[in-house]
Image 1 (tube, helix red, strand yellow):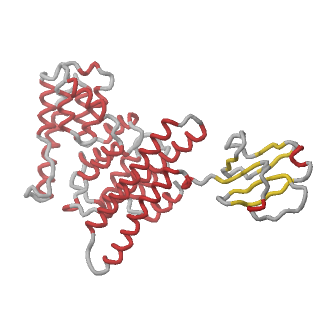
Image 2: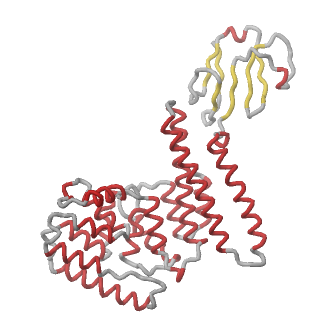
Length: 376
């Protein structure tokens, strides 16, 4: 027997039954009775074939009795990703033209429009990859598709945050509404359960094992009205404790840049509201209802309360919007670094590439962001 060996870091496929993740190919000695030849062919591929005489290296002279075809897998040759490249090409050309015109005029709105077009194209690509993965029976190919989904999901998630921090013209530079939208869109861990509970609209919904996690999740993601609606489905919703919490959540101040008050005035109103919430906690009125007490601790921005629920989420991003909302709802874009540090410090120290990239982005370190994206 004879073997062909390839570097372990290469990703090769061939037209035999050998698995695509095997780097050594075993060929019968009979294949080499008259010696063998190798020649490069089109499509980043080369062929191995028997020879009895010297032949030209030109691909057109390769005989039909090929022993083995070998080619390197390139992701962009995948039909779904080729479609991504083709569709984004038009947007890229439009961007080049816009860059030229920007030298004489401000085109911020057009930049935002093109950014959203890019993200829309990526989202469609992710959906196509998910559909293909659900239908794929070959394990190796399925894993390749799932890997692509992870990569492009991370890219779109980071791109969306870049759009908020560096492209969109946010009124008053108050970033919280946009940050909450980003968290809800990319990390909707309790949204489906909340919708099911509200649709059923049954008293005693606390019997659902996901009830309290969903209530807390809605509050942490800034969907306070949804949280209040879910609390009304509790069998004890008419009790004094539930009414006190509902009143606190209902009266929570929200900043509107067009509301006619300055951030200074809003800050005073906000701190007064949180002081009232803390006084209720201090009075131990929620002592008999630990879940309600937890929610009240969260809305007062207590670090240990956020830390106690960190394990329920796959990443610290889920808590980022809530942390900003209940600590510094008036925060500007350049002030998000401290919030990122606080949330990233909760839970286990293990971090993914996406964790590091988002952290660098919120820190304003675009050089690090570029480096992390290159290595995705």
